[in-house]
Amino acid sequence: MHEIAQKLNEQIREINPYIYELLSDLGKELYYPKGILTQSAEASQKAFRFNATIGIATEEGRPMYLPVIQKNLSAFEPSELYTYAPPAGKKELRQLWQDKMQKENPSLQGKRASLPLVTNALTHGLSIVADLFVNPGDPLVLPDKNWGNYNMIFGTRRGARQVTYPFYAENGALNISGMKEALLAQKEHGKAILLLNFPNNPTGYTPTEKEANAIVEAIREVAEEGINLVVISDDAYFGLFFEDSITESLFGRFANLHPRVLPVKVDGATKEEFVWGFRVGFITFASEYPEVLSALESKTMGILRGTISNVAHPSQTFVQEGLESPEFWTQKHEKIDIIKKRALKVKAVLKNERYHEVWEVYPFNSGYFMCLKLKRVSAEPLRQHLLEKYGVGVIALGQTDIRIAFSCVEEDQIEELFELIYQGAKDLEAQ
Image 1 (cartoon, rainbow, N blue to C red):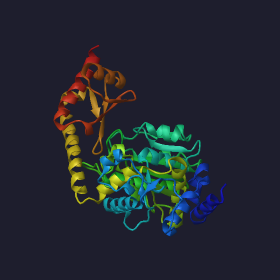
Image 2 (cartoon, rainbow, N blue to C red):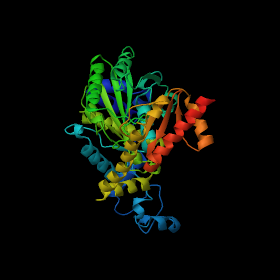
Image 3 (cartoon, rainbow, N blue to C red):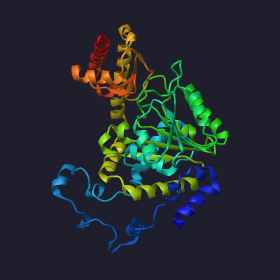
Image 4 (cartoon, rainbow, N blue to C red):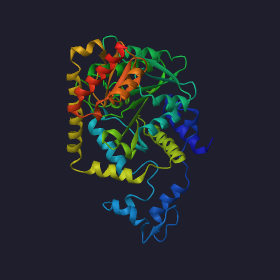
C-alpha cells in the first residue's frame, strides 16, 4: 500500500475507526498522488518566468485553440474552456454549489461538510461511492422501487449484495419499518450501504416531514445497534418538490447523527439546472471531523485522477456562469413551476373513476415521474402495445408497474396520454 494511502487511513482511523471500517479494500488503497498535477500547481504559483509543466499548448500567453470552435464560444475566455480543470473541479464552482446547498438545506446549518467535488454527473458520483465503500458481498439496502442502474453501479461493478424492502407500506406511506428491518438484518455483517433517492425514481415520491423524522430516527437506532452505515442521498431530482413533502435533502439531517453513520450526498446540475448533457455532478461528505473530510476528499481525488482525470472544463464554466447570474433563481423557478403544473394535472386526470378498474396510482408528490400499478394486464405487453398501436412510450417495470415521465409531456397533452394508456389496457383485456 502506498505510504500516502497509509497516512490517510491512519488519519481516519485515529479519529473515527467506524468510518475506516466502512472503506472498501480499494477505498483503503486510494490516495491522491503528488505527481505532475501537484508540481504544475506549484509552478503556476511560483514560475514567474517560464512554466513548462502542464501538457497543453499555448500561444501568446493563452491556451491554443481552433477559431472554428471558438467562434461558437466567443462569450467565454479561452482560459475558461480549453485548459484542464482541476481534478476536484473548479474551485469557484465548488464553492458556488456549496453555498447553494447551504441555502436550500437548512438542516445543514452549523454542521460540517466537505467542499463538493465535481463528478461527471450523478452516475459517476455513485460509482465513486461504490469504489470507496463496497467490497464484494457488502449489503446495498434500497427499496424495491429503484433506478435499475444501481445494480450495474454497485452490483456488477463492485459485487454488492442487493437487499430490497417494499418502498410503500400497505397504507401508501413510506415503509420505514421495512427499511429498518432490512438494515438490522445486516448486524452480523457489521456494515451496510443504504441508498435513499428522493424525489424517487421511478415513483416521484418524497417523504413528508413526519416520515423524514422517522427515517432519521430509524437510522440512528440501527447505528446504536453497532452497524456501520454509509447513507447515500441520491438527490438527482432535488428541488422538484410539489406538495406534501419535505423540501430539502435528508443529507443535512444525517450529518452528525451518529459516529457510525457516514452521510454522502450525490447530486448535480444535470436535472436541478436542466443541463442533462453537460454531465456536471457533485459528491459531498459530512463529518464533524475536518481530518476525516480531508482524507475522504483526497481518496475521491485519487479516483478522479485515476479514471477521468477531471470533468470537462467548458461544462463547469457554463454551470458556474448560470449560478452566478442574477436571473438564475427566477428562471429556475419558472421551469420548476411548469413541471409542477404537469404533476398536478396528472393528479387531476387520474381522479377519473373509469381508470380505477384498470390501475392503482402509487403516491407521488415530486420529481419527474409517477407510476401506475396495473390490475388486469402485464406491464411489458402493454408497453409494446402502446408503442405499436398508439405511438405512446412508457417504461415497464416488473410485472405490474409502468412509469410515466410527465416531465416531458405538455400539460395540455396529459389527459390524452392517460386516455391512450387506458385504451391500450382495455384492448389487451379484450383479447
